Image 1 (cartoon, protein in one colour):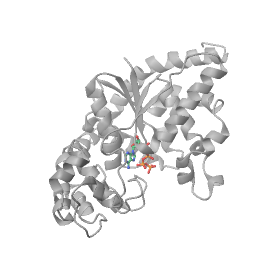
Image 2 (tube, rainbow, N blue to C red):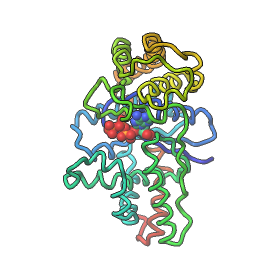
Image 3 (cartoon, helix red, strand yellow):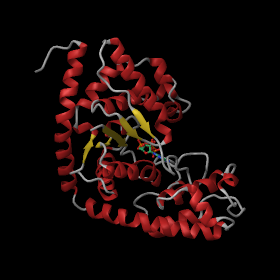
Length: 335
Ligand code: AQP
C-alpha cells in the first residue's frame, strides 16, 4: 500500500487552520484505508524558532492529544514525535548535502519567518525544507496532505529526491505528490482575510484555538472582520471579499459541505444571521474535540506511552531506509 506522511509543529496551540487544513484530512485518509498513514509532531522543526523548553514539552503532548481527539487511532496510523525517530535528522543531513543554497533562498516561508533580519535567523530555519523532505522520504511516502502554504516545500522535496536519485544513479526515493484539496486548504486570519490563520500570530483574536471554549469561539466569530454588505447570491460575488469568503469556507469545511452549498443556504443573508450560525456549527464540531483533549492531557504518562510505541513502529520502517541510503552514499556499516 502507498504511504502517506504529514506533520504539524508543536510551536503553539492547535488552530482551526491546522485542524481543517491538516488534521481533519489526516483522519479522512486514515479512515479511507487506501494508504498506510504516518502522522508526526515535528518538534525538531519547532525549534527552528526558539521555544521555551517546558512549553515545547507541553505543546508536544497537547498536539498528541489533539491528534487522538480528532480521530487519529494509533492502531490504524503510526503516530510519532519527530525527535524520537532519529532517522529523520540523520537523513536530513544527507539531504543538506544534496540540496543547494539557491533552492532554500527561494523559499517564501523562510523569507516570511526570517523577516528583515535574515542574517539573524537560525541555520535550522533556513534548512527547514531539507528536514521536511527527510521526514517524508525516510518513509518512502508518496502522498503528503498539506495546506496550500506547504506547496513550495513539497516541490523542493521532489527536487531533492530527483537530485539524490540522479547523483547516485539510483531509483531509490519516490517523487511525492502533494494532496491539497477540500474547502479549507487555506484558512485565513479572522482579522485579515489576506493572511493565513497561524498559531504564532500575536493576536489571539485572529485565530480559533482548538482549546477555546464555546464563549471564546462565539466571541471571535462575532468580532471577525467582515464588510457591511450581506452575503451575495453566489460564490462569484465573494471574489473581492476575502474575509467573507474565509467565513464561508470555514462553514463549508466544518459542515463537510462545499462553499457553493453554503452560498445556496445563506444567499442574501446579513452577517448578523450568518455569524451566529457559523459560531453554533463551530462550537458543535469543536467542543467534543477540546473536551477529549483535556481528558487526555490529564494523563501525560499515557500520551508518552503512545508516542514511545509509535516511535518503535516507525523505526521498523525508517532504520532500513536510512541504512540503504548510507549504503548508496558509500558509508561503512552497519554497526
Ligand atoms: N491557516 C491554515 N489553513 C490551512 N492549513 C493550514 N496549516 C497551517 N495553517 C493553516 C496546515 O497545518 C499543517 C501544519 O502546519 P505547521 O504546524 O507545520 O506550521 P505552519 O504551517 O507554519 O502553521 P502555523 O499555525 O502558521 O504555525 P506557526 O505560526 O508556528 O508558523 C500544514 O499542513 C499546514 O499546511
